[in-house]
Image (cartoon, rainbow, N blue to C red; front, side, top):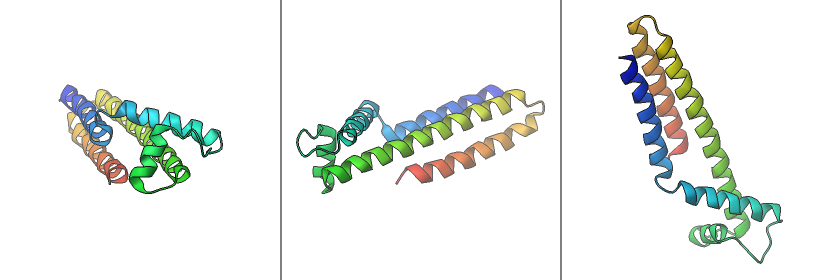
Amino acid sequence: MKADTIRGFEYDTDNLIKEVVGGRANEYLLAEEEATVFKAAGYPDLDVPPSVSSDAIASGRTNTEACDLILTMATNWRKAQADLRANRLLSKAKVKAATDVSDIPLIKAAWDEFLMTLRSQIIE
């Protein structure tokens, strides 16, 4: 029961990440990197990074607005990742330390509630 519950935490985590970024993790990292450089350079009118300009064109925003949105989304996702990791590790530790198997469903229920709340915050 402990091993299955712990595997479930890993499975849930992987599925949420796939749901949010799919196979586009490198694309998102590149967009964040390009937006960071663009903002640090003062949002120049020339030499707009492709990730920023493509987002601006697709969304009808200015390059500055698109850049800031990319960075806001990246910051929010980084926080969500940190929360997901911290809660997964804590939940696994609680299951491993459980001396009474009747505690495991309570730990799993708390995990499920956390996951549902996080999912609602990051998936639109």
